[in-house]
Image (cartoon, rainbow over all chains, first blue to last red; front, side):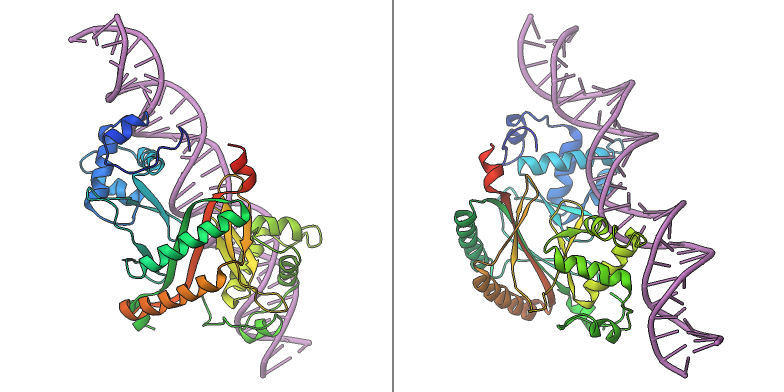
Length: 157
Length: 157
DNA sequence: CTAGTAATGGAAATGATTTTCATTAAACAA
DNA sequence: TTGTTTAATGAAAATCATTTCCATTACTAG
């Protein structure tokens, strides 16, 4: 973690300075890639996309930056169970568009969905409240993911 | 994956042979440990517990066996986001006792809970059905986990 | 009893992520 | 603008959970 709770909402620039972080070329490059190519990039994916324009940005920096971005709350770090983390922008300039993920265990493709989100969110909120009260547990975060076979992979069997 | 769908319910012994697997001493030792010490053991945890009685069972075998057990459906492989997998018996001799997990991000302790399970299961079932229909996705599995601070860790801050 | 094949263990390999450390460059004050 | 302070950086090395290799052992069906 590090320097306190810097999570919240808002859009870049100010966000950094406020938390004592510096906004460097490399960091902007990474944010830029994330905002353009929407969805589920691994550190290496980002490295490959950033490299042509910024050949001097190393993989180490990608990792460090993603860590910072996720601390600041600009990026979500996702785990689809394939041994490498994925990252996606927490929100566009327009704000957050809440969605969950559907992961194909065969081709590893990830589908975003927004159906049932309201009911899910409602239940999750209830559960968080209930569990928090019962176990004196302060819930900060949850993970809900569905795994299975996408249409294509399911057909092939 | 491997040799077809060997998932289902039932208790040991028969399970193995039926799927073409052999029930060896090492495998029984691992099942034994899992059934005694309930909850969330890592491969190394298991290794350490098995080793005194079976010094000749290596870590590699633990991993391989856990893989088999999880294929056969006797064991759930869990991921609490700390970089190592955990394993728990899918069911006791009495049958499954469905529960979910509450993970403390500070001390990494994991709490089982069974509250709200009915509502959760209901919603998850609905969602699975809905998503399955809409995206032609065959959902086989889901993950729902809450993260936060346990009473102790929360108090310390 | 014997062939066929699954299971095993130890060592080496893998691969994503972190750490180390010397160098560079934001940020802010003078 | 110019320092000065300290965060940020890159390259290489280190970590560490998990897998793979490979030669050996041991179930099991015939």
